[in-house]
Picture 1 (cartoon, helix red, strand yellow):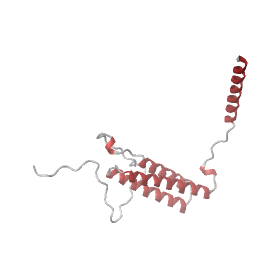
Picture 2: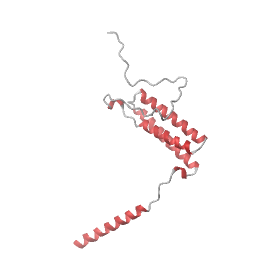
Picture 3: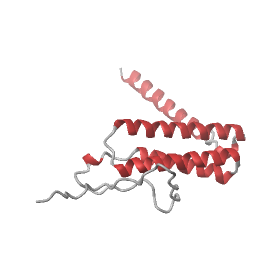
Picture 4: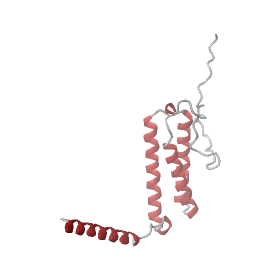
Length: 155
């Protein structure tokens, strides 16, 4: 019985050593810039639409404040604008801007439900320094305040 355990132990040790040596020979991850431009565009478009689906799903879940919905809309418009710019005028900087805009969209879709924070202040998903504000068009309204309106009933 001892010989059997010794052979199994040696076999497992040999497999582990072979696995470690094989792991060292793995190919490095391919960068996006090394792909041909059509493949880069395809990946950018795919990632944008996945992030947009995440935003839509989060909106359908509900439980968001007016500021959160506004931030989501701004991040969606910003992402779409950056994607269109990268497709119309492709450059390394434009592709980087799309990647950052998609990351912003994902950050906005991961916002917590305000009712679970027990009155804590929500941090915005859009940093003031990252994206310029999207100009409001006719028919848009500014975001609602996250604080409830004061009670104005006569006492």
